[in-house]
Length: 213
Image (cartoon, rainbow, N blue to C red):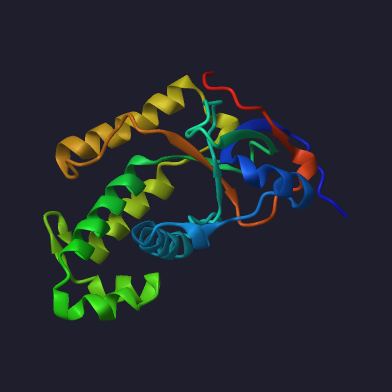
């Protein structure tokens, strides 16, 4: 039996044009295996913190924007997705963006003698192997854990998302940028975590190939 959504809102997910047919037939599924290696390592770190905080959402899931945007690339399409706004959080992407850059810099510093070994590791194994690497803000594993904590704890449910709460998300990032994490960017996008379950085709509608909002 399909779940009935009592309270509905619309969010917006970007996908490749050649994927739309399959999504409309089979639903929208997580595609975490296609993520860049650095981002996959960030996902591992953030999901570990989510587990410790008893947060039910995961980075290795489906994400969307709370507001409609134009397609990112020429071959992309925006999908309108119906969700329950009381069950999905809005989060600030600045924490993920900074973490991604940190992991990328650490990977670029790996000595040639160890590069083949690191490249053969899974994202989880690579993060464990490199977790003690020193970066400006501290040990990599500790810094990622702290950024993940801010990411999850500062979220707001979509049902409560408003101009005021959107500003509050940005102000939190701005405060941390000035006091601890210089690389945080307050003006980056907000995103909605839609979970790990497949979203049924009946809740999805392609918006065409518009180039502007």
